[in-house]
Picture 1 (cartoon, one colour):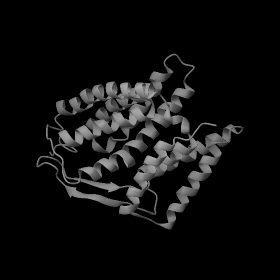
Picture 2 (cartoon, one colour; picture 1 turned 60 degrees about the vertical axis):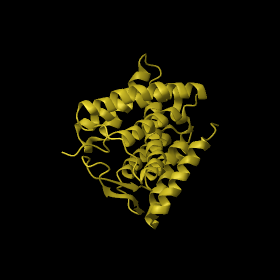
Picture 3 (cartoon, one colour; picture 1 turned 180 degrees about the vertical axis):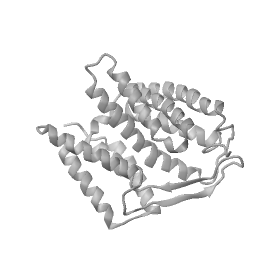
Length: 263
């Protein structure tokens, strides 16, 4: 049996407690939780292939609904009211979402293989290389497209943003896109010569399409960033992917227009 990734589960639990402080749960949340438990039980049946397919299919549907905040019973508290961090930025607000962390819990409990364990030295090296390349490509691309500009800052709400982005956003997104999608595709396509590459670029493209509501520029930039996160995951494991993703977000938040230029 694969050992559970307790470090990531603990971090996710801290993030969930943070969200609970600012929000509240209704009794209807028991429905998706129960369905996730059923999906997890089905997905962990080694002797029943169709049961596993059913479990993963139910999870994918629930993950989409949770990520889009479609399910009732989650009263996500607003941690940052709408405001401009710089005069030329679009207004930004932030909610502490209680629904999305359920995705991370399910993945870490049911699919602990998504962690992709590597040595600490290799993870640090992969993070350093991937973060450097991703910052140059993604933030450099955003500068060239004229949607951000140089704007160093550290507003009073920064630490709340840091905790939310690391524990409730980045960890969950990387567990899903890199661990589950890229890692799962890599396992399925390992017999192909370029299976690892196909898995990486497929996950990166899906990550980019998840930003479709922000416009084509962000789809392009998120896809580019997804390639960087995918490289970090491939060579350094889930921890490297999370560190790379969070590092890029932190540099964007602290040094450039956030989230983007107005007009």
